[in-house]
Length: 68
View 1 (spheres, rainbow, N blue to C red):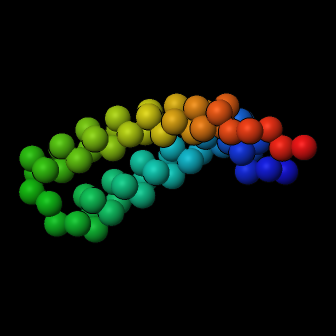
View 2 (tube, one colour):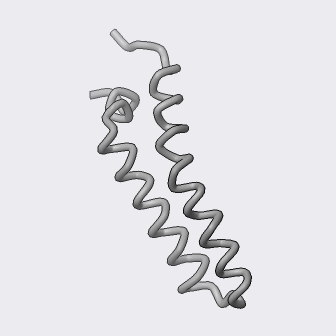
């Protein structure tokens, strides 16, 4: 199965988004030593990215050429 066809599945796209959110928040807030205002800004940016990632992956999957 092509990786691009795999991205056409909404469950795969949202699973990738959840992994992105979890990894980003862990690395930037838990593992990083940020002050509270920076933690809030990073959390907001990560949550916005959580919704952008599946949309971007859907656009990529729909624009990729079909394989034979």
